[in-house]
Length: 306
Figure (cartoon, one colour):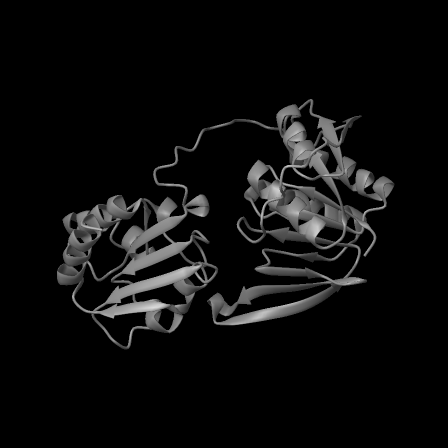
């Protein structure tokens, strides 16, 4: 399957996953970078060609028109973009300049001969919407959907391009956002606390269990936004973090569809809940019906003795 896809993300790890998608689809992967360190990383991680755009503004979205021109010169069939705040901005602008169709935040992406087959959740995750879009097209993809490209033996060519920014886009101020919680997107194991906990202090059970198995701690949306017990950075679900750990263990999480959308790519899902009819058990590989205040301490002790 011949052809070229250009990939971009302001998050290096996501861009490497997108390179992996291109290579797995039989497409030539051309990576777009805005800093030299990222360019060298892509060159070593499977990109067949890396385009380094020298930024006068250090504001990638100001270069959307220039990027559109790059895609035309490269003869690209698709622009695959990491679904971050900056990535979505870039994707929309480029799609507008090129008049290409745009599909946002896909949960699944398959490349066929002349089109892309995409899936994404709709109606709050209650259904999965499948769409076919003819190439050339622009697609945005969240983190964790593809296996990262492996390190290649020989580094790809890095070509430096000069580009003029759109002067209508100006950076007025930059303020750092201090992340309060763990990076759940890259966590191998996650313990998730739900509304089954009666008091904030009881969350220590979740943290103790996480410590025993070497996991990060997340929560359901209500724990973060309604009770304010944990930072909003760590709530999991369709409007929060989408995770893909080897082990996801929920405690007192009912498992509404909006939450399950965020965990369904986990390799193993285990759940503890008092309600045997809780929706989480339909998504779980393993389940324990019981009082978390009895089950979790017993589980911690058993794991300590393993």
